[in-house]
Length: 201
Image (cartoon, rainbow, N blue to C red; front, side, top):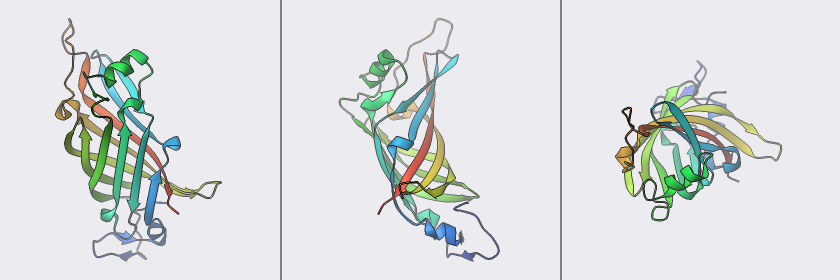
């Protein structure tokens, strides 16, 4: 089921987005379930391999508007001290003053400012990403994975998202030069989002 699907029998809204009963039924407020969601990232290390990591502690909310998807919103708060890359020394370095300064800036936030239906199961959400006290725009391409009621009676929706940033634009500039040329840590960071959200009662 697509929240952006269209057929000849659908009724168009004033914004031009077609509405189905399935789409309209998704309208509401949702809370992200961190136990079944992942916020991850990938950075190039030493110019030759990728290091993957994720954040273990975060909270977030969604508002889905089935009649007008452009009015949908998202909010996310991530605890920087919860970063994990599979290596304790590296995690400690990332939390330090060289990178996230987790003691001084304990939270990374995202607040949406625009949502766009792209057709099919795809849409794009743009918002303000704040890291180290610096706020810059971030655009996330999202795919709707579907909606279901779980065995405990929770109404769930699922999304997968991806984005890319240049970490230097948020003041994350630490690096080390390699003898063979290049740097230890890439400026470009790939972000990934696997989101399961539960509809509020």
